[in-house]
Length: 227
Image (cartoon, rainbow, N blue to C red; front, top):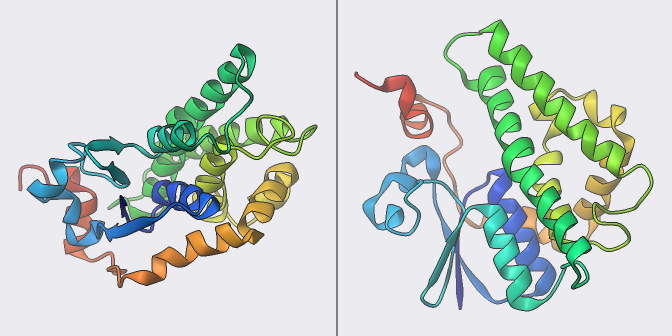
């Protein structure tokens, strides 16, 4: 059976969506980041980057949410584009666009808007601008087709959904209405039975919700370096 190490963040939710869409049997293993589970030696032996998610499939260990989506898509043959070079190129390009652009800029926007120990105007301006710019590229892409790769729902849409459903928190509550094509995709996936089951995985474990000093030390150790 697959072991799925997860928390409530956007990246694990992408993988939860794939698992629920395919009906693959898996064991969810919580990684409570605010309690520091990601820093435990036994977890870092699986994922040296000390983040979630991580997938264990027998002797195979895969970490990074987009790598896991690609691994599972190729393993099952589901939610993948047609087997030709053009489709493969589009799939890899957009999957990496989410991995290297959407995720990092969204994460930094969230950090500096909501969690930084002091309000700093320049990083807020920079990361909000870049996150919005990246989401607008997705919105434009979806203006003339239902899904990121055309007519078929794929792992790229799942990767987009993981972050884009949190745009109100990343950028502000008014932003989804300004990107109607992206909002349409998010709403459609969230309404799918698998989308609802993926969201419900968060209720299987009582994750720490307080962002107190313990939570900040475990989530943002650089803020306490040298102390």
